[in-house]
Image (tube, rainbow, N blue to C red; front, side, top):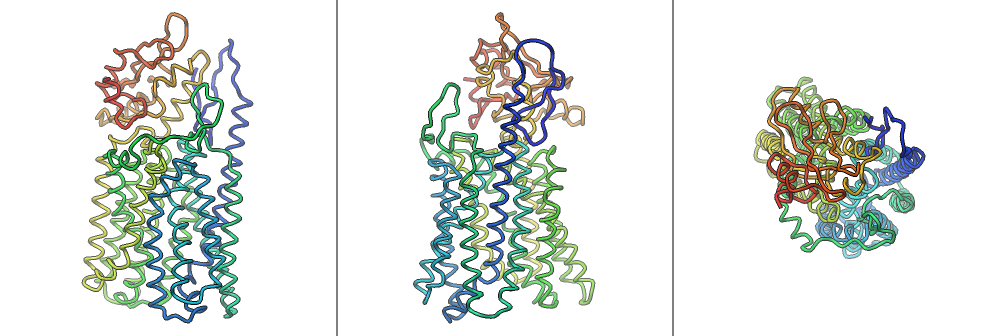
Length: 566
């Protein structure tokens, strides 16, 4: 039997040619689950839009608000907000622990309510001490959000669905931020304190509404939220993380390297907020409105094109798509630096506009893809800690960017752009070198889809499939084939398919499915070599040894080859 991928449902497949015989296909339950997932995704996206609209209203006036209501000078307001943001960094590692213990949905909802409580007290601020107290509360909720929401996406979507959901989130959040900024501009046209208070309270209300929407999600499919999903389990249990906590994360050298590789690119994301306004005003001597125009180009570009670009990339290896995005960043930074040496007039402005468009294209290719790659590279039982650790590659560059870039631009604007270009270029190269060490289903999310569809066919033993670990194994290595035919054959072998797209399965004497460890056939045929096994045991010693020798699909541990050799 061959299977086609069902659009929007990477966890299953639709039978293309169903032979007569026992075992009717569970079409109705599959359709019901797919409809439930789509409804959960819609509620999730509605919550994100409402959250982003409220944030878009507040962000443009965050400094002005406290200056207006307290009368404190702007430098003091900025210092207090910076100190609160530093305190908020402590929430990142704590978020990982809470996600692994209580589930991502509970942490996201709790963070929303914490921020809503903080915004509700903003109108009561009358000085620096109270301002620090309430903004620190909001900062803790802010810093808990990225890792927790990334883990929530992992619970309600899988495979290429994660890429699509992340892309849609980025697109709609950009649109919401833009709409919120427009609303704030109209409200502040009144020029009264009531308008400032109204913006802050509206942002807090948006957090409450978003929390209510996300609190209704029932699409989580992992044990991270405290439910045992193993075969035969019927009652909820609290998921227990493996011993070691963050020590276990630090021992995973591949994931640590993935986090470090992302940091230079994350630093590059700060260009529009920190570097470009100063560069355009002081070096290019452009009109004060130009930074806002360039920011709008980026925001509108991401809102309009993130979903189409991600759709085009969904059948490409995530590592290569993200690395290509980093390479485009490098070109954009080189162009930014080059226009600084062009004589004044229209030409430098055209150059900086084109560089901003290139920067936006790099963001479209890198942003959603890199997030999905990190999410699928994290083991399920410690996903919260892993993603919280990965989030440091974003929060630390964000914290150091203002001081670092203002100092560098004062010394040499050209050196600033060259440093950024070198960082993103080196990060892209390092990501490509890291590809073979990452989980196969993180690099090639469609292999999870094909493997799941294949093993769902009638006559296959669920117990044998669970034991084989085909779906979540790490340690798949490239065969080194340089031709297009060789690469296609390799991808089919990784997903356990032969050259004709049919599952190469062995069967034991009882007729039950006997699935061993699929290995890559270096001959170029792309046929998956499957070793026999006892029913439900996950492969005999011969199949395990073969898998260990030639890039086996492992049982889902950090090093599948070592597990296969055992």
